[in-house]
Image (cartoon, rainbow, N blue to C red):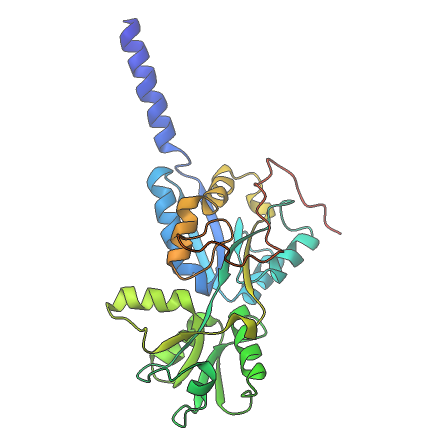
Length: 284
């Protein structure tokens, strides 16, 4: 009997571990460029720790405004560092939970047109009249695109079509409403996977010295302070497995470098501390 009881206890403990956070809902606000990658990560996590995720995407600026207005998100994955930092200063985050989960890569996409030699020469081609980019006021990828055009002295050369976020800017290019567009490298990867064809001849990674690094940060918000699932998922995002997934999606990682990437540049401002057990940002 004792053997049977021990066996039953082991099975019960295994079942409890498998159930994990079943029934717990984690609400995440995510910048449009990272939505597909985040969905990959939540799927990986939920396979081992059954958890229901509710994901809302948009431009970082719009999501920031929603959080300030009281939207009950547990986690925020922004496309920049400024907005998570401001939320931290405003006392709306869990202390020391702000971390850089990826470095974004800006690319120029010109469907049906071969990249010439570099971004500048490609943009000076006569057949490019309309360029799409995300709204620089609310979307970090749009702000980076504007910096590039200014640095290349091309800001007044084109008719600019602005998307509310980088996802909409991508659609402007994909549907032919712009001959070229500045988008996230991760979006190119997602498009290639969905359509089964390579865009390597139609896109080029923009020289990162032409724009401020797109340091994408995440933060645990106060509504998620007591959510074990939210905390554990955030830790998972910084695991080697998750960072490999993020890198494969077209980002640079600060905590995992791919083979042959010894000495890759890492922004000095990157923060890689562990998630605190429990502490609230007292605000200013």
